[in-house]
Length: 106
Image (cartoon, rainbow, N blue to C red; front, side, top):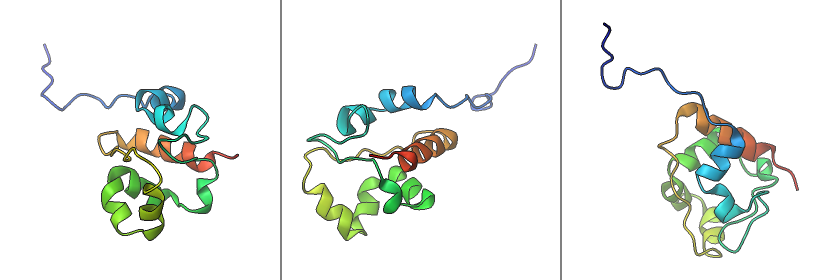
């Protein structure tokens, strides 16, 4: 009989983007089509302001990242909901979320 130590489990496959988007509450604040709501901005065409690396950094620490970015600080004043951290997602799911957001178009 083989024993699996805590933390030695094989990493799970990332959830499909539609499930990830729903499960993590992205649609609640940004809208089902990422069109933006009163709670959070439109995420379509973010590739004009973000790179893969900067968006990954932001999702891991939105508050800390925004402290260093005047554009984000100004944008945040227009919304009542603070952006939560997504550092708890697996690296594969973070990558999937970033690629999805960067691919969105109006």
